Length: 225
Ligand code: SF4
Image (cartoon, rainbow, N blue to C red; front, side, top):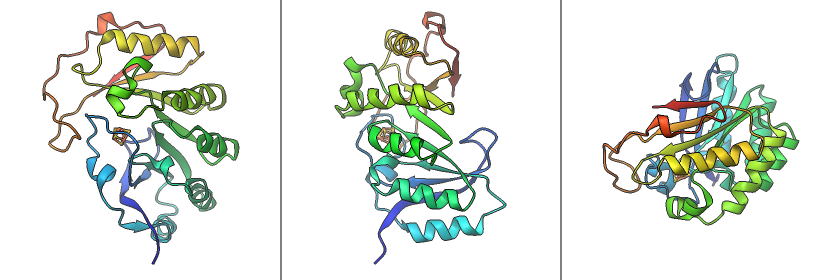
């Protein structure tokens, strides 16, 4: 029987990658347990779609879609992701990856082989809070990805989701300082927590708003809802 790797496919979106009509592949499973995660179905659920079915779907969409977003869950847990990306590229699509950065070896391989055009990297929290928020102790691996991508990838977005019961303005400023020190010159995105009934942990629905006047604007910053 064919291995199922994808939990679901969003067949068409213009929102997940600016200026790109894309499909999103939600690869199953994650090595983190962020309390605010609203993709619990993808993190804990069973995959339903095989690689063959993914490629057949994309074959049928040639000319109508421009790009494919590899998301999850954490898509780099799938060990054959570079091969999948290679096959998607052969169909003529651009590729964006959403990642928490804990698999630097795979990200390096994919960047060096030109298998990815854009990466959205989650900077979950400063080192001191990283494990508490993600339930994962791979900050060193994340930092290896961060350092590599800042040096090597022009299509790079770095983002943090903030629920102010978990992270405050000091934590955000700590991240901004770190990005400055590392020479990041792109835009840093701060994303507000969006409440749903499906988050991994129950969090207060209406947290305190971020006090934007306390945020250090050493690099370009955008706030997203
Ligand atoms: S928000 Fe956290 S738990 Fe959810 S998919 Fe992303 S890294 Fe995994």
